Image 1 (cartoon, rainbow, N blue to C red):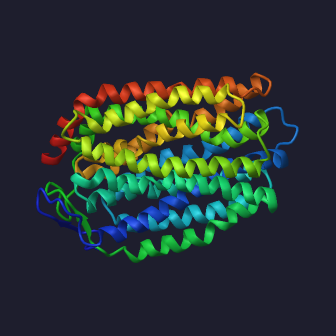
Image 2: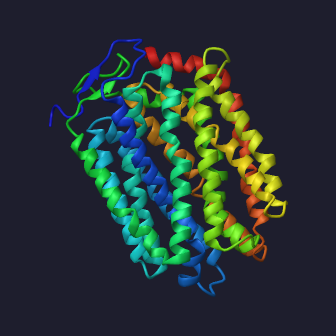
Image 3: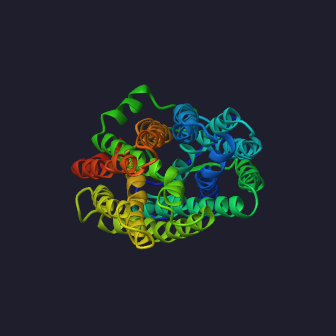
Length: 431
């Protein structure tokens, strides 16, 4: 076991990916795709679950919101533990085991007949994803240099909108033409296969781009972790991402229900098909474009990654408000534009997160980020929308407007942190 995850330290300033980098990216991208398919399948079938398990319950709104929070609660609490482990043991082992665990737990979600059973299975999905969440972007940062990391991260995080869209569509089709349980069963076989492929990578050496990483057997000291909290751009980034996650997490959890039940814009299958298609198109184009723009502006504009992220988020809010008060089908135009602006930040913000963290604690940096953005973000917002929906007699607009306003807060935080980003990136590379 002593040679597992032994780093291959490459020369400083290298501008080309390490050997096998593309294979690593493809495998991790595929896993991230199924990660978000699994997450959004729940949102897609939420009306069916509510009718079957909580029919007549006057608190059904907040209880359905807690299904998202149960997953996120376990995810955010377990992530720091697995992030600490990912800086010490094989990241491939953690990813492989995590993917298998969450796939099995997702299948168990389909077997649930009671609300409590479903709540518990969603918590186990969160634990499995916590093993994967901090390790995967860290592996990508290990294999790709700073110069191209923005666009590579954009490819990796492109799986978020594509996987989410497939999840919406898969859940919608299953709910409409079969049974909502089938949507959960369908993600189990590919998830287990991907987990086994990761375990086959267990003894492959990790390729570390920066020369400052500790050699085998060395460990980062406590001061290296405390440095994260003293790095302004890391703190601004975590808070900006938390504000975004608060908004988009609550909205995405309830959006199919909002359009289907509150706005009456079509049956659940049709709503998920249209919403999923919009998410695919905007997610692919905006995520890749944001990563490319961030990389090209880096060195030309101070704190370019934060500027791109902040401006995109600020632009999304007015389109979102227009969607709330515009009749469908015209409102689909505002859904498209708001989603495009929201996805524009994905590559730049996550690239900045990797760049300002020293390689020896990078997995822990992602883990701490996961804890913060979910504890302050989408672990809170879905129940808030559910509670406000119950309070306002099934009027969902007040909850959507309150939660969506955090887009403005996130945009301001990223713009405020832009002045620190270049300096913190340089310090992390020479620490």
